Image (cartoon, rainbow over all chains, first blue to last red; front, side, top):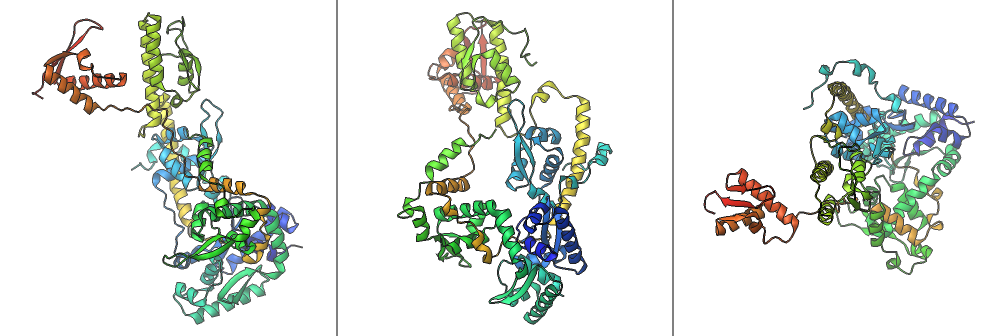
Length: 179
Length: 179
Length: 255
């Protein structure tokens, strides 16, 4: 019989999001049981105002500190996880996230400006990676988002991205102008 | 006003025992208050049968997994992380071998991930040891390989390590061209 | 004015001009098709070498076909533009669509798409910011479990370790620019040379002005310098007949 205790211990020694199936294997139980235990644990943290939270991000369960403790943690570790991405980088990241797999050329076409530099910066920061090559002449590199992208945005999976459809039906004039 | 939430968050991100005074400083409170909060937290873990425990060991407060979960944790670490551990250990050992003397921080920046756990494992195995301290602020520990490391590789001395230069240039040529 | 790559309005391939390059060997017309269709990377083709061969080919066949030469020039111009577009940092995307023109519908569709991405980018920025307030535990398994790390030296030898070190420590790849023919002659030098010659001679033929040139590229740069001086009104050019001698006269202030 596996317990919340065991699940919590496994999550504690993990340094990345852990898929339910990996936990289930180690505990000799089912994925469903693991998910149930994790949800129970997450709720318990929430209820007692814990310094730790448990969420499903990037395809796995992950413990992190609670946002309300962020100030104290930053003071303590003398570091901030704050990542400021430029407007151009966020725009490019959005295009890769929704259109992946996508080529450099396709990104530049959507943005109307050359995006090679900004794309390289996103690759360097681990948000975006090469995911293959297009089977067309020249075999251009295809780019996609990484698990770290999901993790850094706190999303369980790509389907957790905000929906684009309602935005596409809005007229182009509503768009924020590029500066 | 510091809270159990903040104390728990600070303990969670620490990878070694933390002195009450360090926690007190980060939280702008007294040692006594920190000790009281930690005792409260430890009791709460105990009471709810948590997978983590908080204990005051030599040097300070430290979160660890609960002994009752030890078996599951060992199985989990062995099973689901074996390949990752191997890769991490080999990379770290290679960096120490070729860049020694080297600090923990330098290793982590080359690998791009925190490498403290794996470095400790290599120290425990006797392949890597502290060889001094860098004469910079904080005087970080410098690591190098041990005679046992050389012996296991069948090398008379460090100068017997294969030269890196030809590998670096050859791999540059082999690397897929940037298009 | 794109020369249509696969159609009939180019010269018949009588004794076709062929090239031999690492990426391709065969008729240049075929290579041009492949390049324009982006089936071969334009950066893999040294255009300077191809041009040299074409001129040599013209001499060998002793039969300059104006049609063929024109077609060759037009193709090379496009290839150069594509190549420059690939190699130079730029603000505008230069691609086939720009050369052919983009339909207004496509532009409109893209503007809607882009504005949607801009809105959602703001949202992604917000998520990123929120998430930065949460700290994960990065310590991994505690030291008590260090014995679970495998004995890595059981599996490898010194050579393996060296390969791993090389992979981890390898500096980022440098951009390969070997396919770009370096230009060793500058316009400023060429302008000075022309000015110096004319200062001495007052008037000279183009042939005289390039008499001291060793390489074709040097002659080309000097010709461009002449055009630049003409544009500035500093020289007067006269050519009695097509392909005839070009006479150059200094018109500017005394050098």
